[in-house]
Length: 604
Image 1 (tube, one colour):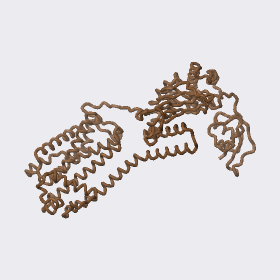
Image 2 (image 1 turned 30 degrees about the horizontal axis):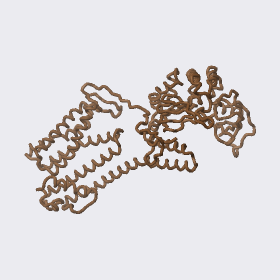
Image 3 (image 1 turned 30 degrees about the vertical axis):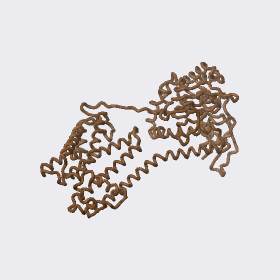
Image 4 (image 1 turned 135 degrees about the vertical axis):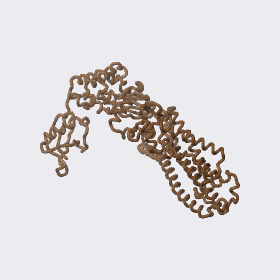
């Protein structure tokens, strides 16, 4: 008996046999449903694959614009013809995108439905981003040429910086990627932080160079003091020098070789350093959150593993029990990362019921125990079922334990074992779609077998009380369930020698007779006599919670409500609300009461 090594991180791997399992094969609790809506003619869906490619192409152009705009603004007094042509082509692509946007459906923020009405699309776009998109691709360079015959006018260069508005596309892209589970969140966030830092360094270096380039006395500038004839040097040397100054200032290194020489540069340096305070806080805060988020679950997992190991050692538990405990903790660590149960718990009951029907109905419907029952009966069952994961070599049901739940195997495999005189015998293997534990639940016996997983298994669990209540409410379907179990036992007498099919025949007869004893559903195994108990009053209104001396012997009713009602009839001056035993332990399930018990009714 051992835990599969793939369930535990490297630091907690346990030496076992050849049992292995890929962590990528964890069964899915649900399925992805892709719904498509047919849009009007000439209207494009924003989720269209070709439109997504177009958007990614524009993102590349945005990255080019974000780099070239500050560079042209600071370093290029006269734009080369080749670069002028490239900028014109890029602006042309964004002009096409403006026109295309009038034919792209959008997601309504109130109804969360795609709007494909051309009129609404046009009104929405014109009233939102249209003006900004239009200004970001306006031909300010052509205006400068027409009015000034050159491009050195600062005003037109500032207007040309409006192209940086296109960066909102990059922001939207990262917002979408951060929500896309196909991509690693940590990698996306780190990439975003790096790009923000590089853009800030690039812009600051370019703006600081522009201040020096336009200062009347070049030798009294931060770059002129180090390179007197810097304007005669090549673009590469000037750009690298500007980036060097920007990075040393951002990182607060401050070598002192490049520093402000005039009031303009000093003012810009002050503003840049103040900006760096916010940027540094933003970077550190984000990185801290990413690291804490990525390590908190692992730290808690390590602490749990350590606590379980110490518990097993302190109590001298056998090795196979310790390995089962560790295996279970490791699997729970992995399934918690899926957040499946947490997702379901946060949904309304109606939605959870719909999900349960979608996921579990086909599985339950194919189970032999429920062949021939009504769909309504199965719907009631699946609404109460819970999905659980079990690692290899873990016991689901122990032999001779009280029957508490019925299980349906969704995936994996389970060995059916029996211990007789210290000898373990394997009766068979249950595979996906089979039911386990039904004999103990429906026959009201102790579990006759031990059920142990042989591989990672997903199992649906249904409590015995819930099953019996649903069968009581649907007696015809309940009779079908009992008949299905009887037929299986008849066919597999050799497999189940300890439980003859005649043991269940009287139970089946009780369904047809509507016997009161069977309606209780939780009496001990096959006992026919009613339980007799003695009830006393225990009033909290009296000093020291004194008990009534007088006791009354009654036949145990079917429900706790009936028992409290009998108490009100027998003790007229009291209004009992709870039942406790002689050890003062509260009883909330009438099935645990035994024949001859002394019960005390609590009057609060």
